[in-house]
Image (cartoon, rainbow, N blue to C red; front, side, top):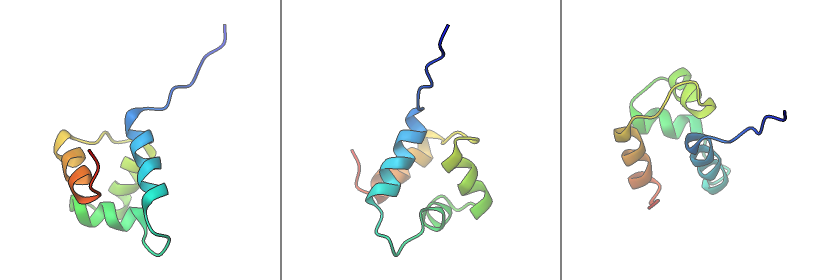
Length: 67
């Protein structure tokens, strides 16, 4: 039986942010500042190791103007 690896909604969001962010900005720095967490915590969220809270998602969508 073949396993299909599905991307989580969090990983899709992170990829969308990476694609939309200007090349002169660092996504990890932007997320760390926005969410008021360390860069290490931001990396864990980017890798999907730590789930984003609904408050985190709302802040990200508002900041990056995503619906």
